[in-house]
Length: 164
Image 1: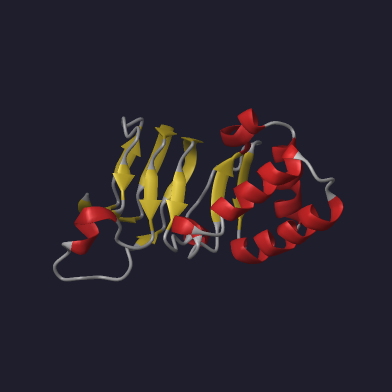
Image 2: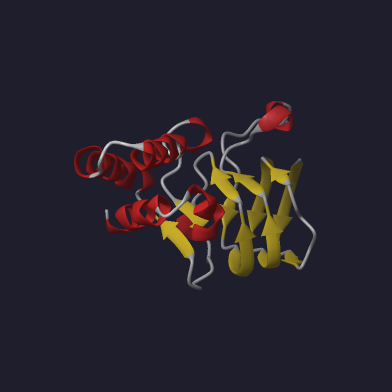
């Protein structure tokens, strides 16, 4: 989707599985459930290649997600999380310096965790957040519940990332 939204209200809008890869959002408000919504800091997908005029980044600033329930949502491509307001409720993790945190967490997992499936899963998740669409990300917003199905190792990993 190629679009620009300024001072819009997306309160209780049905946005499930929306890929806003080439959309810009400035001073918008989000409230209610957002399920599998994907925002990108740079134009992404087929629409991103067709932008005229071409742009290297999608503008995202001043958006308020504090009343939103983020369920398996994704920010990638250099999305600036520090320029938005996020939920301050229990369960949400907002991380800056993401790639630095991942490096320290990876070292801790490799040197302090016993070999086995939990260690392998933790390293795999760190790989996801340091490659592909996340490679340019310096921030991450996630709800702990998004990876609860992976097991208790996830809480241990989130604690490592938050403390790094």
